[in-house]
Amino acid sequence: MSKTVEVTQYRLSELKELFPEGYETAIGDERERISNDGYCLWSDEIMDSLEAIIEAMGFVPHKWRIGPYDRAELMVRFRSSDACDVSGRRAIAWIENHLEPFRAKFVSVLSAHYALPFYKENRVYNKPGSLKACPFTGVCFDEDFIDALRKDVKSGTSIKDAIGHLATDAQRMMEAECEYQSSEEAIFEKLADDWFLENGDMV
Image (cartoon, rainbow, N blue to C red; front, side, top):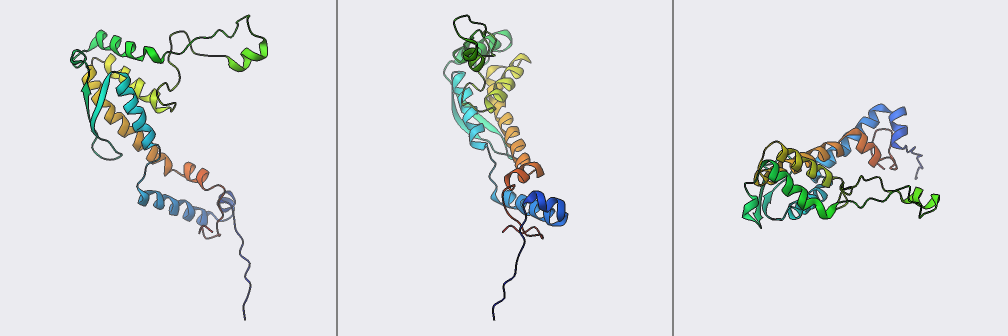
């Protein structure tokens, strides 16, 4: 004779409040799945940004081995041999000149040519001569690489070495993303709409 058993299901937020041990199990199980999967979210976007800034600087990506918790190696071909060992002010100027096509166009929000509702919705906050936000791929990693390259060159590093150092920056970004995707905050957001039993098993 069959018997019907009612099972109560919970959202992760409810599980956290009512059954803390089950909540910890749910978080731990997902963290283990992420670890076993071995894929780091945003890795592709990080590499797209890296390739884009290298090409914007006038170089060609050649060989690389970049991944979280691994060696970081990057080789590029230089279209201009004059740029390889340039450092100091010349290197800073080189970078700025190659970023020029990505400058933001400045639009005054006080332009008398437009009615108030228009320019309230379409105002541009970039200062004249500043870069567009995320100018290469539209993803925030563009900004990270630009900042890292500028900082390296301003410290006296040659363009060749500064480009090579971007591999380490890419690796650092990947590792940060890996750590975040395994964090309680990220897992909670990911599983917020799923259902669980009180022991933490996902339904």
